[in-house]
Length: 301
Image 1: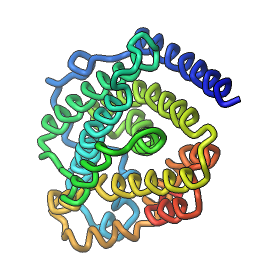
Image 2: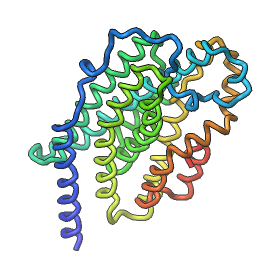
Image 3: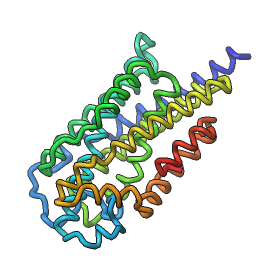
């Protein structure tokens, strides 16, 4: 019985991977060509939709000048992009380890390498976008860097792909708004469009891998994996918007951090963006009570 089930799932995984390979061949972007890197940046446009700013709706936001709001959102989007680069480097290493000495003729292997190639282009794209906006690179805190180093070294199976899915799903919803925002910088709208389109394939691949790896696993493994994935989400969310963005906008950093922590509007935006992700994790058996407690703490649930 076990052999038949595994063969069926492997076949399903191959079918998904083959379709994703075909999609990548038909519709992929080269940011070096698609993004107008030489175009000037309109001074009045935001780095992200104001509604996605961590301070939107707070008393401090109401007191800020328009220029401070523009500056803040540009630093916030670059902080998010920098966090994206950091995690994309982690996920590339996890995927390479997962595919090490596997059959290169399989569609799963070939799409995994296609995803890595996409992520390399995305990281360069984000780096160039931040450079164009004149914003320095924001890096995670030291503890998170070391946790990331450990995670990329030991994570495998559903834990690795769960971490990948968490990072990509949260950013996907945000960027779908950014790419449509008429008051958002064209460079952010274009890079968001590229990332959304190509990451949609990556998320389908991660979901299929999770389904396959979770088939028939023990209850203990489900509980352990669910908590590890939730902790990964905690670390990502904690580092997504660096506290340095507030000083860069000329704000009282301590007050800004305090108001951001208590910003109910931003918390609601995060919960809405994670609804689909939480539904999938629940159906996959990866939304246990301890994991849910972590997600609630960071406003993903």
